[in-house]
Image 1 (tube, rainbow over the protein chains, first blue to last red):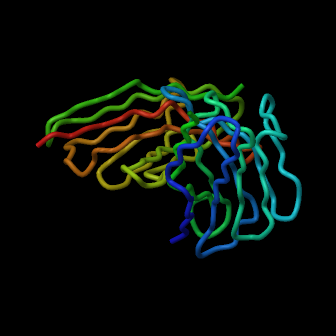
Image 2: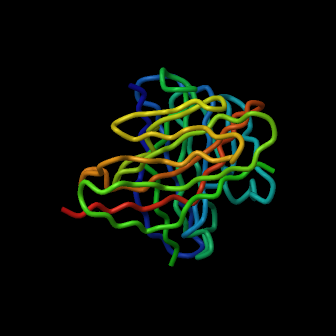
Length: 116
Length: 112
């Protein structure tokens, strides 16, 4: 079946530094990728949608200059959290559309980001 | 807007107990409804789905019925196993877009 690999699974970084999270579709071409964020005891919230080769579409309230999304190929999307602050600490998870899953959505395993 | 309200956890059950995790939704039109499961260290996996009213999704002994009159999609299993320990997410996707709306997740621990 369709597999999405997300890396790293957890990361701790210092305030002010940038962190890159990768999301790869291993056995299918992901025409669209989605990035979600989950704060403790809250729902997964969609941050942005990216189509291969075009700029990402950000949800209201998400800073595009802070959360840089690149979807340069059909198998890779990256989320870079720039100048991270403790309030950016969260669980980030990607989803890729394509492949043979129901409605073509496959989720990665998520990344736990802690900014200290 | 669309939203999902899910029973808060954590839930701890003994093996072979009956499980219910409540989920209700708010949506315009006719959304599709899903239950996803996340095992420790893994991604979200689709557990079951239903696309229209009165549909019943089922998989691995889990069931959920799309109830439009009560806007609910409660997850049930008659006899849980230790291996069912995971976080369960209820979700909907509107029939007009790609976006999923998730509940907060319910952590289930099954003890022998």
